[in-house]
Amino acid sequence: MPVFEYKGVNANGKAVKGVQDADSPKSLRESLRTKGIFASDVRETRGERAASSTSKASAPSGLARFRRGVKVQELAEVTRQMATLLRASIPIVDALGAVAKQMVNPSFQLVMNEVRRSVAEGKGLGASMADHPSVFTDLYVNMVKAGEQSGTLDVVFDRLADFTEGQARLKSKVMSAMMYPFIMMIVGTGIVSLLMVFVVPKMTQMFEEMGGKLPLLTRGLIAISGFLDSWWHVTLVAVVFMAWSLNRFRKGSGRNAWDSMVLRAPVFGPIVRMVSVARFTSTLGTLLNSGVPIVSALEITKHVVSNMVLAKVVDTAKEAVKEGDSLAKPLERSGHFPPMVCHMIAVGEQSGSLEEMLLNISRSYEEQVNNKLGMLTSLLEPVMIVGMGVVVGLIVFAILTPMLQMNQLLKG
Image (tube, rainbow, N blue to C red; front, side, top):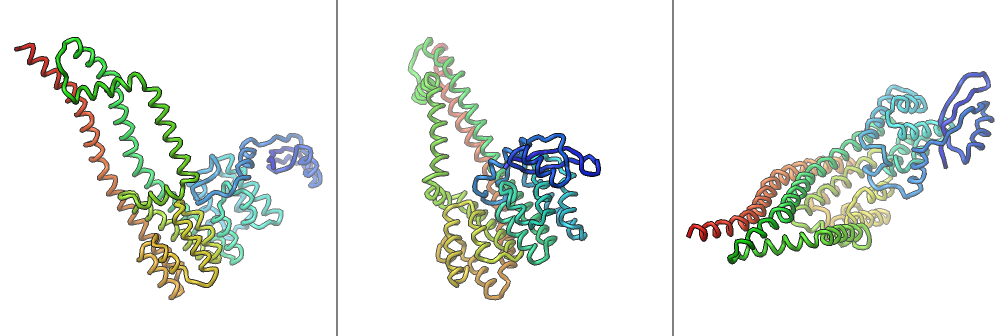
């Protein structure tokens, strides 16, 4: 439904303005008239129009997928502010209004104003947030609903803020660790391409003029350079097409096979598994700690685990728990969750402290991920530098060798 900004006057002649959704400007004017407000200016909000089309899609998986323009850090900051205001016994409607007024992101401000309006009309906070799935995920909404039912909204918002900030930090560290080798690969490919396309052809022409038999390495380099010089556009299209096809296969029919291969990868596989386990335990522990039933919590957590293989394991565990089985047993039977994790979950179930145990596992695995990423980054740097040096050195050697041979012939 489109959202409109309006300006007008109320029955007392006081100027008013606000944001409200309606089928059309005419229906909005009629709705405002019933409230004693006579609108003088009605404009549809473009940002919310894009959001409404986005919200028709299915709810995103995990806390990292938000509507364009709403960052994870912004949501975490708003969540922390809501916790502070509610802890100070500020009414929910006033707290939402205070948070919305100081926002700098206009699209997020519109969403918060809509949530405030719905709550003021008698709708629950969780249900109001559920109307904006592109901003508030299932995990967020269910935790807020649980907080409403238990009367601990301030505590729930604190936990949500901690969880959101933790997930953002984990994602940032993973991305930072992968960024360096990615940049090095691009720089190395660019340097080699420049040498092959611009430097080697000129050297080839000089060798042909001087005559003589070229070394095998030099002839191979010249052949590669000639191919790239003549077919660079075809090579570029082929590389782009292969990357597009691989990405489509990874996200489509081949996602299960791709995710399974990633878990078996020698270096990155253990890190991916650790990140997934950290997300699983952190999300499930936070949900259970907020009063969400375990079956509902597992259904939400399944979408947070980005790896399809592990998500299926969580789904199987959910069905087992629904039938009265423990959580640890199906996780252990899958063989995809570390034995120590399964053992700690089993101990938590037996002692009645599953939530605390899950959060302890999450903190431990996040620490392990940090250590692994730090070690990987420190190893990748010299490996990438040595690799680039070897490739560039071979090219330089292939160019200089015939030049030295020609120099000796001329002297002789």
